Figure (cartoon, one colour):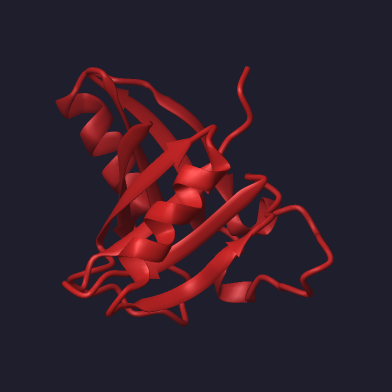
Length: 140
């Protein structure tokens, strides 16, 4: 199982990526904007204001992968969602168990479901106000 951190920004993610790459002497691994999101059956449409915002970028810092994104313009950046712990593993049952445990006394933002980037993904706020992303990934 991997624990990673997702750093969220309010439209200045690219600037932050440049800053952290210099600080940690690291390389940014691919930047995807909301406008580059693949079309799927969910009916999700990217707001024009978000097209150039960063949806995902990764950076290896030591032994950890840090992930970065801009919050969509219709979501406020606030304590609790500015850093999101992200758990990922190949074991779907374990990810579901952890997701269900985190949701006790909390709030589910996205139920565990298939997405274009994961065979099983969900987002939940725990009872302490931290928002977790939980995902299964396919073994290589």
